[in-house]
Amino acid sequence: MPFVRAAERRHSRRRSVLRLRRQRPPRPPPALHRACRRQRVRRTPRLVAEAGDEFVLLGLQTLGPGAVTQDGRRAVIRPGDLVFYDAARPYELWFPGEFEMKVFMVPRRFLGVADADLHRVTATTLRPAAGVPALASPFLARLSAAEGPAGERLAASALNLLESLVLDGAETPEPTLLLRIRAFIADHLGEPGLSPATIAAAHRISVRYLHKLFSADGVSVVRWIQQQRLAESRRDLGRTSATVAAIAHRWGFSDAAHFSCSFKAAYGVSPREWRIASAPGRVGAD
Picture (cartoon, rainbow, N blue to C red):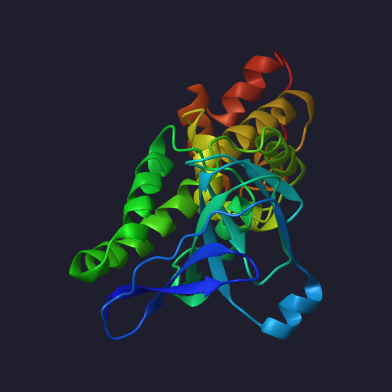
C-alpha cells in the first residue's frame, strides 16, 4: 500500500504536521499551516516516556529563523532549511519571532535506515544548496500543498526521499571523527577481527557512513587497515629477529602465506627479502 499523508492540527505547538503512514489510500486532506509568533517547545524525558511515540520528524522551515536541539547538538534553521528530530528522545524547538514550520512525521518502523544513521543527522541543519536537500526542500513544499491523486502520488515518493536525506547526512562530516577513527584503528591493528563493522559500532555510526568518510581520500577502510598493518610489519622486519609468521600474527594477519603475498604486492619483494636488504649481514630467524 502506498504512503499517504494526513494533516493534523497541533494547537499547542502551532505547527503544520503531516503524518506519513501506511493505510488504504483515502483522499488526503489539505495541509494545515500556521504562522506563529515567538515560541519554545520542549519534549522532556517524562513526556517521551508517557507518549511512547516512535515517530521521526522532519521540519521544513518556511518563515523566520528557528533552532532545534537534540542529542547534544543545536541546528539553527532558516527558510528552506530542513532538520530531523526524533520523538523517541527529548528535544527542544525554539522560534524567536514569527515563524512557520512544516513538519513531516514518519513512523520509525517505516523508515528503512539504521538507528546510527538517524542519530547522526538529528538536530543537524540540512541546507538546500546542493545534494539531496536541494531536491527535498522544494519537493516537500509542494507535497504539503498538494491535494487529491497528485498529493497521494507525491506522498508515495516521500518516504524514499526522507531515507535518502538521512543517508546523505549533514552537509559536512564531524571534522575530528576521521582522525579519531584512524587512531582507533592504529590501537587495534593487531586484532584479526578489526573490520568496518567493529569500527563503525565503536563510533556509533553506520558502516555506510564509515565508508563515506574514507572515500574522500580514495582509499577504502579495508585497504587502509591493510596498508597500516603492512607498514608496521615492515618496520618490525627491519628491527626485530622475530619470525615472519610471528610478525604477521602480531599485526593482525591470521595467515602467514597471505601476509607474504600482500607484502610482496605492496613492496615488490618478499618479507624475507626485505629483511635481508634492510639489515645486511643479518639473517632472520624465519
